[in-house]
Amino acid sequence: MKLQTILTTMITAVTLTAFAANTAQVSAASDTQSAISSNKSDTDKLVAELESANAEVIKLNSQIDAKNTAISDAQAKITSTQARITALQGEVAKAQTELAARKSVLKKQLVSLQKEAGDSVTGNVYVDFVLNSDDLSDLISRTSTVNKLNQANKDALSAVDAAKTKLAGLQTEQETKKQTLVSTKTTLETEKTQLVSLKSTADTKSSALNDKINANKATLVALQTKAAQQDAAAKATLAKLSAKTATVAASSSAATATPAKSTTTNATTSTNTAKAATTPAAISNTGSTHTSSDSAGNAYAYGQCTWYVKSVAPWAGNHWGNGAQWGSSAAAEGFTVNNSPAVGSIVVFAAGQSVGGQWTADGSYGHVAYVVGVSGNSITIQQGGMGFSTPGGPNTQSVSGASGYTYIHR
View (cartoon, one colour):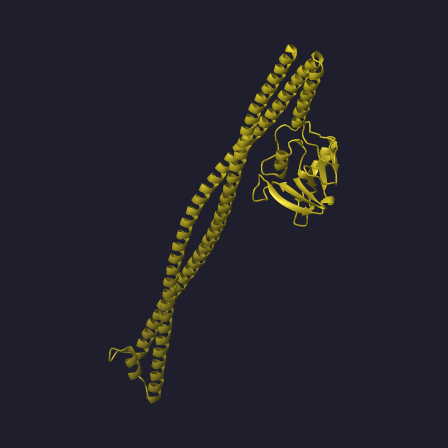
C-alpha cells in the first residue's frame, strides 16, 4: 500500500510538471502569435500607405508631364512669334527704304522740271513749269503732267507710309505677344519646379515605407521561425513527459495488484490523451498526416497568396514555387494530390484558370488558397494576395465547380 502511494505521488508530480511546462510553452507561443498578428496588421497599414504614396507619385508625374508639354508649346509659340517679329522688322526696313527711294525719285523729278521750266518766275517749280508753256496746247499738256505727277507721288508716298505704319503696329503687337508668352513660360517653369519638389518628397516617403515593409517582413520571418521552434519544443517536452508518465505508470502496475490495474488504466488514458493533444488532426480524405521536410518558418514574400497559405498551413513546403506549381511540388514530396476538396486542404488554381467564374488566376503564377468549408460542389476558401483589400489575409470567398480544381491533402 505504501509503494502504491509513492507511485501515485510520482505520477501526480510528473503530470503537474507536464502541465506547468506545457502552460509556460503555450504562453510563450501565444505571445509570439500575438506579435505575428500585430506585425501583419502593421504591415497591412504600411502597404495601404505605400499604395497611397505611389498613387500620389503617379499623379505628380502626370502633372509634371503636362507642365513639360505646356512649356514646350509656349517655347514653340515664342520662337514662332520671334520669327514673325524678325520678318516684320525686315518689312518695316523695306518700307523705309522704299519711302526713301520715292522721295529720291520725287527730288529728281523736281530737278528735271526745273531744267525744263528755265528761269524761275514764282519760285515754285510746278508753277514755273506751267507758266513757261509755249502755247495753249503745251499749257494743257504741262498742267496734266504736273497733276498726274502730284497724284502719283502722293498716292505712292501715302501707300508706303501706311504700310510702314501697319507693319510697325504688327511688330509692336507681336512683341507684346512674345512678352506674354515668356511670362507664361516662366510661370509654368516655376510650377514645374514646385511639382518636382513635391514628387521628390513623395518618392522619399514611398522609399521609407518600402524600407519599413521590408523590415516588417524580416521581423515576421523571424517570429514565424520562433513560433515553429516553440511548437517543436512544446511537442518534444510533451513527448518526454508522456514517456515518463508511462514509465511510472508501468512500474505502478507491476508493483501492485487489483487496485494498481485501475491506476495503470488511468495513466494509460492520460498518456493517450497527451498524445492525442499533440497529434495534428488528419484530413478526412487522406487517411494520414504529412509535413514537408522544408516546412520551418515561412520563406514566401508577404502579400503573396503563397505566404498566406503557408501561414495557415505550416505543414506546406517553403520552396514549392509559384501557386500553380504547388500541386506537382507537393506530389513530389509524397503528399496526396487529387481533385477531391476537403476542409484543411490547399486548393491550387492553374495559371489563367477561372476561380469560380468570378475572376481569373494570374496567367503566369496561378493561385493557391486554404479550404475552410465544403458544400456539394462548392468550397469556401481563405486567401491572401496584393489584389485583395487585405494582402495578408484572410479574404474569404465561396467558389463553385470545386471538382475542377487541384487539392493538396496533409
